[in-house]
Length: 326
Image (tube, helix red, strand yellow):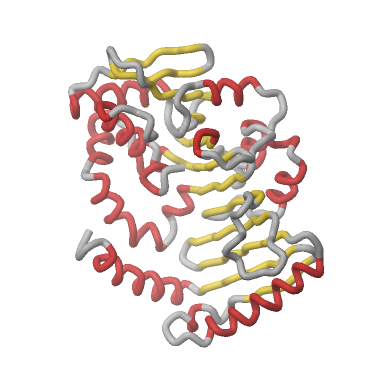
């Protein structure tokens, strides 16, 4: 799950990424909420020092036109291993994962980024599958041991290890960039959770957490340097709901209302130019930008027909972008 592991752990990393559909999609952490949000679980699990939260509702993504177009490519990239896991382990990676959320801490360091995955799976069955696949694919004896609240995964006779915190049936927390389990232990032992981070909690309240993709967070130092505003935004939030149609909303949070209005004026000029562009302009006719207090809000809606056309065009470019084919 990270560059710190030895080459002999390659298959274990790959298998984990396949079992967790999150890794097949983008490499990610999540928490489930059957009502369609996941915010309460995130708020009670992640630490107060979280800098951002980005979530994917995987099952909703599977209902989208994007999934229909990308599923063959994703299966090809996985090299048939998802089907193999389903056959040999009784775990279907395409249905096991329900939500994924990635959450870096306030320093936005790789080492302190959390991945929490939830869905329809059990620790014992996943561990058994990982051991079976490691043995069959690379003749690796993968040891699974308990260390306090953590589960430790390591190759027999080797020092390098991976750590996970199973939080109950269908929920597991990992820190892919950590060299040991210290950060996970700190998170589990911490008393103050994300719900105590009032600024980030307020941003998350503005987000549609039932959307396909959603997120909110502070913008780290230097993170807004490429934005063409005189006064840079300090935080951002938003969601992209993609099924057959598209409904997206992005908010940039500025220091005050005047800065937000200035940003909207500048953005409007850029958006007008984009709408006049011959190839993409037709898809941006419902793109709007407006100020709401200290927020500059960008919204975009596209019909099912427009989404179909856009993805068709994008897919036609994929073979060229990937060297001539899948």
